[in-house]
Image (cartoon, rainbow, N blue to C red; front, side, top):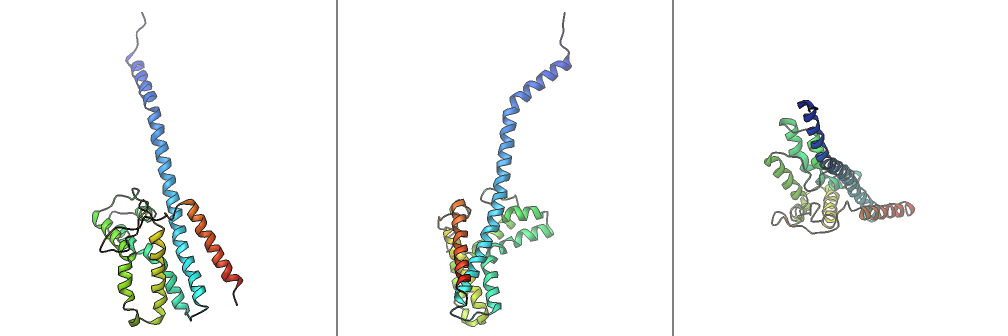
Length: 222
């Protein structure tokens, strides 16, 4: 009479369990790969978004210099101010990395995150970063600073223009799904539901327009 050993029964049970879990494991793996792909695409998209801000400001400087005098300091300030709003809000993350249990990876993941993909972090760090981002994307705050522009050195005026250009571009190139910009902060956190900057056709159109603008500046240079 043939009997089944406990060992073989255990192996059979494991095989049955693996067979039943197999499809679920593949689903989890597929979801993980899809999320990793989205994170990488978001990171590349964020870099292209920041580059576009600098390029549009540079083109604006090129057009403006044909009508008004802009020093090299003023031009550099405008370009720096046009990208700074997308970096300053990382200060709390960097501080968390420096003196807390955060990491460089957390900073990078947050910098390129789309809603729902941010790394876990202390509430104070997350709220500080969020409000810094809102502060520098607010037309209310920029307007208050601009009201005192006459007290600032003239070389800093182009920086204000670069800041305003950043806000104006972001107001219409962020959607409700991708960090809508609260231009009336601190009075409201609501933002305009525009076209997300990482929409593939918009990225292509944006850089095509940039190529035309810079091409025209080059061809009409004196």
